[in-house]
Length: 225
Image (cartoon, rainbow, N blue to C red):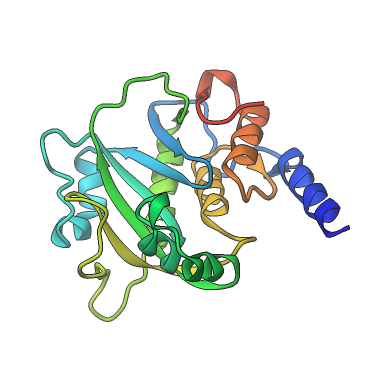
């Protein structure tokens, strides 16, 4: 019975659009683009680096994220469970405690990474063309996801997957119902796109994006119906 209720919730969450009537920052012009990276359980948003983005996220440069490197083309943002995200750099390092934390209630983190040129199409990358207003709203949403204390945004020391990424404490609590992919969906709605009402999985998020957004604004990757 529980499995049927969960399946029904996922189906309705995918098929019912959010928002019901148009995107929050939708516009006719599609002068900017963003990318969404997808793996079996997680999604990240990649934002093209330019002077405005570097100014918006100058605190990342101060924290050692080398977004001004000549080869850097995208800042990649992902929100997720602190225990799981930090404790599971690779699938081979999967442990019970971080999984339990992610399935119940956990503090959240922002993971920031860099990417160079991205050749498209790729099965795990989707491109979205959005308006200037949508792009600005997306940046504001991402910026607002970083936790700010009395000293501003603080990088979590000694924690990274590689030489160019880092973790930062984030706003909001992570749980299985409101996880990394629901954060991505909320961010994309700020960009003027329409998602499903509830998208806890990358597959359902990708399906809803394909259902409700103009093909001219959406070059799909990831898992499609």
